[in-house]
Image (cartoon, rainbow, N blue to C red; front, side, top):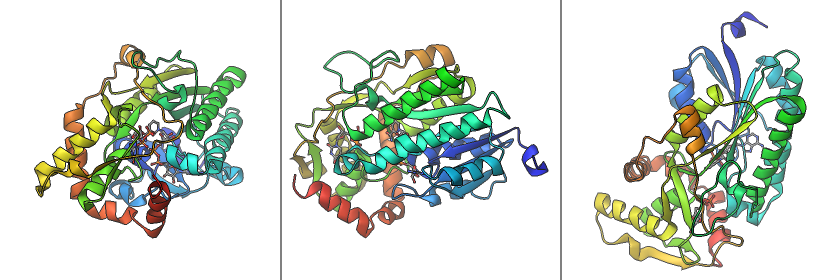
Length: 355
Ligand code: NAD
Ligand code: TYD
């Protein structure tokens, strides 16, 4: 290994580091761990934005590699070039509605891309038997809950959408590499995140953007579907803990204990925007539209394992997190406007015009 690399205690590939959670994670890890080299591997899909990483782009322990995880030989070059000893795997196609419009990219990235990373990690075990592989996943793999109950680490997988099915396949592959090859894996299944840098196809930034423009606020079905929301910074602190201290072979559920019906959430966002911007009642813009096919009714996480074992708990209340999120998008209108390209408008038209 060359001297420049030897100075780093660890050399870690973070896939999907230019996306929503990846950016927030790198903004936490790069300054916190100057002795780690953090290699951001991202192919820059529509959901990526390298400008999120401006505050760290010149740090000596951060590098960006424009690589698609479906390209095994490109990935291998990266593993070799940096003598990588761990992967934190976030790269994914991540939006349920897009997976319904066209599942192919989800199968490629979320299944085949994960498989490529696992194969390269397995090969690196010859040099580094304790090669760490942290796979970031979602609570959506568990399917839908009724009115009561919570997802635990023991809940059987029942994915409903092509997105959640592709994530479930990735989770199973990771589990099998631990059982079969002894790869040092951890998997985390987290609830819905919200906060800065989320692409405005997801509910919260989409509602903020539309409310700002005076456009209809589309709420699927009867609006009573429930999600359990977690501020992205709390998720990233959990990832930091699990990566360092999680037990090999285990999975950990992460959630905010913030269950809220979609329509109630949308009204709250409207009120926060009315307070800040004035100009009338934005909740009058709400439109109930045709439901998403296979729409899961309720998600709720039992996060007691990570709380008990690793001492994690969320630090942001939902009230404070939502207020900060609305403020962030309104203070960063340029960021939001930069997402609204012709491609976004085409997607928006395709997704919402016939509902
Ligand atoms: P995102 O869509 O905002 O970002 C995904 C990133 O992955 C982008 O930068 C994109 O360019 C990159 N990427 C996609 N395909 C790639 C490929 N083939 N090769 C290299 N890079 C590729 O997603 P996110 O919301 O930040 O989610 C990150 C991870 O967390 C995903 O694995 C997702 O399943 C999981 N997750 C997300 C949430 C949530 O609420 N957003 C909740 C739980 C788990
Ligand atoms: P989303 O942010 O897409 O996350 P996920 O589907 O992964 O949970 O959606 C969150 C909830 O909001 C989900 O129940 C679907 C609903 N929703 C709407 O009602 N309207 C919208 O325009 C969008 C994008 C989502």
